[in-house]
Length: 236
Image 1 (cartoon, helix red, strand yellow):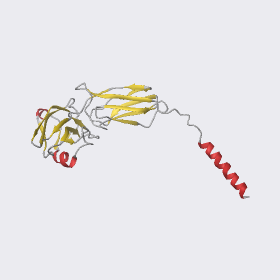
Image 2 (cartoon, rainbow, N blue to C red):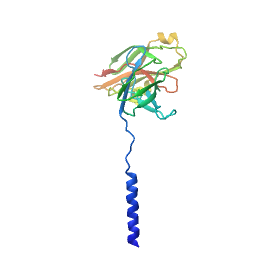
Image 3 (tube, rainbow, N blue to C red):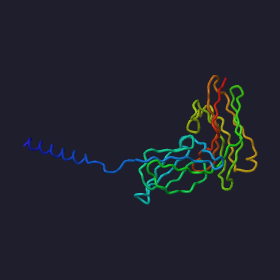
Image 4 (cartoon, rainbow, N blue to C red):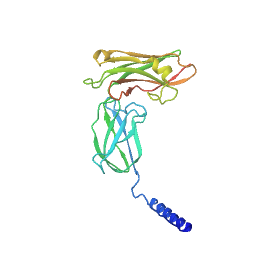
């Protein structure tokens, strides 16, 4: 009897193993989708940071209400994903420091590229910097390409890091960023556009190299930053 039971168990296990070993007939992700977000003011890539915006994809090939899939931004304003299923998609850049962009539909297969032109909430103009001893000063103006309906300007923040990756997600916050935030909390106006702002970051460590920039954000749901260029600061 024990032999019979053992035989039946072995047979059942073999059947289960066979049923679990069926091949997946669905094709894997075989396409690459990439592109850039172009600043409508400068004609160049939008200055941003890793994750500073997302490109949302919704595959319409199989469903009219698909679950969204997001590609995060790269610091240079580009995006790229090499593991996309070929198909027909609805695509839109979102969750960035720019005015809403129209959704587009396109087919993605092979190596597909698509650039999007966006209008930033704010531009940092006339950016300059100087180092006095161990104190960094960054001076600039704020310009709104589209002032009507712009949310309130919250603040300007310096970002300082010891690598070229510098922004809200890569900064020495407690020492250099947090204590030196410049609060604005006002609606954009002609007076604001004419104002020359200066952010000061004191007590940089001597003999070190830092990378710095400033960012400004408005009071929208994302509160992402519009950035200046990144500068290298060698502290004597």
